[in-house]
Image (cartoon, rainbow, N blue to C red; front, side, top):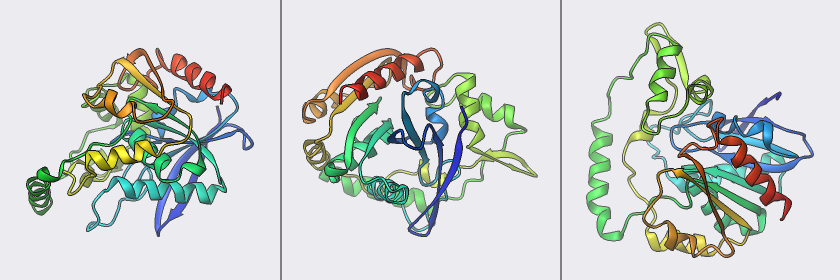
Length: 282
């Protein structure tokens, strides 16, 4: 499948995307998980029916620019970025497909601008991590200390193959093919070797998160038809059932696979078939 590389200027920052499918296909914005990139949806691409899939590299990931040094990575800024990209595409209304962190961004967006979202497909995630008010002082202090001590040198690998092997064994392990797809958008070649392209600030603790009550308010505001797909060997969350009950008419399904079931060639077809069926009945 022939892919196009797209670029958008969002608030003075360059954002990149990978687009596939007919220009007049169903408009779908795809949002990847933490430390992944737009290649996260490559295994799905051949199987999605009549879809114009625009998969973003979120800020600090893939080929998109890093946020300025003084600016933390707040999830609500991602919501604004996605809306700006939709505006540049000329999509007044569109569908969302999100994985993990991307699913949390998609849910917030669907609750923020329900009139613009036609449907919501969430893979291995429903809403962002939350902090309770009494946790904030300690967590903010930790985040500030970590930012002040930032300065660890980047890790270098001798070649692309070494980076692929490292990605296969990451926090959420993936197959070799999945790792190769992700690494294509994740590395920079330098005289010292290969290093990760993603912003090191992405691994720092969050200075501030929404509270659980705030997250639930967004979920209650979702109006679009929604589908939640979890992997049988995925990560899950203890709050998943309570949060899912707040999304009106949410369909839930568990498929064989791990946290990256959509990126694993052995399970991606089943994920795509499920998405196609969901879209056909909208």
